[in-house]
Length: 223
Image (tube, rainbow, N blue to C red; front, side, top):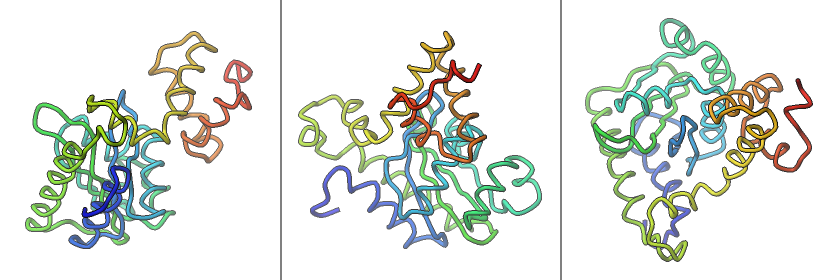
């Protein structure tokens, strides 16, 4: 991590995960109000599949965050994993990802996010590989919390600092607030409407949120 700025650390650690494990991609996300917010990824494919997980709202990373335990989907091409998340499995395999291993960041009481590892062929992690993945997830959590966040934001509040790393996703929450006002619905319903529209258009929720914030799309016009 020598010489890395706060925004570079998640991406660098994702690349370390790819070097240490039999995977082709990795990403790290914070989880807030059921919406994964991507902090970094090892490359474009991992970033894209992470956005698919966020858009669909039902995928391995959400299960890992809720259960606070690893979710190992070793075969998205067929069988139980493909049946458990059929839409995600179809889109992930179309992007060249056949296995996803999601590990929570935090402890048994609190999960602040997930480390998601992506394989291009079906398979399971060995006991040793899972132990390594857990160590990487632990180091990811420690590294994120240990960064000199006051240099990045001028604030001592860790929530403010982490929010700064996820600033690219601010339009997602702005759009959800606008949809809440347009439809007079709660936050969960607004996010569900945003995700559904994105899915129907074959886009990511983050992509659609930019249209909402820029007033190119209103959800009350859809009613």
